[in-house]
Every structure is written in structure tokens, then in C-alpha cells.
Image (cartoon, rainbow, N blue to C red; front, side):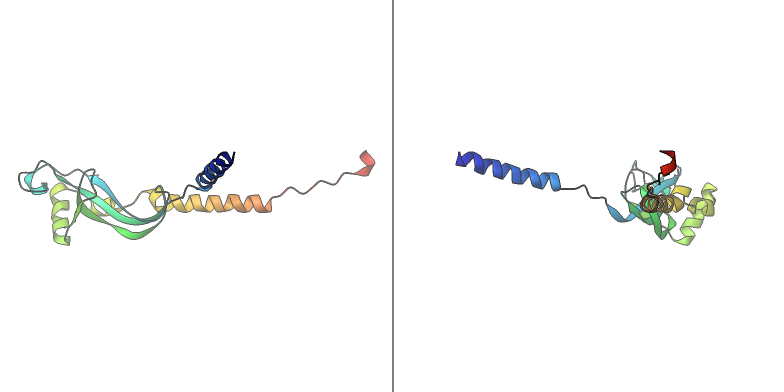
Length: 152
């Protein structure tokens, strides 16, 4: 009988710890690299000599986000880099090298540096909406209606 009670108390203490563990929402600064222009697969843009991997033009910026999908604000302005597809590896360019790549491929630098609407304002809109809903819930409590005794 004592063994059963000890076993039951041990299992219940473990179950309590598992039940009380909550999912944590990740937040913080994240570096985002997004391929924005496919450059020609030539030796000039090869990762290394005699390589079959090629670099493309990418936009890199740093943002503070919540749960990996809600960008709240941009902490580092976007810049253009060369990057491999499906990789976090990138190569920074000097202004002269970047101008040369832009001219050779007839690309618009200002247009490529523009971030999307959701990245710029989406997270701010969602945060304001959540705060607004919370405040609405706090301050819009229904007051009990007064009953007119003459209608009863």
C-alpha cells in the first residue's frame, strides 16, 4: 500500500510539472535574407572556382519580431548582398561592386531596397489591434440595466 502511495505521489508530481510547462513565445532580433534578383549562372557569380553553386542578389535587414512572423520594427536598414539560395551565407559588396552588378543586370537599386508593406507596418498594426481589443474588453463591460417597476 505504501509503495502505491509513493508511486502515485511521484507520478503526480511529474505530471504537475509537465502540465504547468507553458509554451514560450519567441521574440527578439532576427537577420532576414531574402533573394530578390536571380543573377546569371556564370563564373563571375559562382561561389568558388569550378563550383556548381551560384550567388544571387539578396536584401538583408535586421528586424525585431515576435513568434518569427510578426515584424514589430526594423532595427537595421536593408542592404544588398550576394547570397546563396536556401542558405544563410552571404557576401557583402562594396559600393563599386554593387553599382557594377546593378549596371550589368539592369536593376534598380532603390526599388530592390524597398521592404514589403507587411514587414514595415504589419506587426505594428497587429500589436495596436491586440492592445485595442484588450482595452475594449476592459472598458466595455455591460452595465446592468435598470428595470422600470411600472412595467412589471
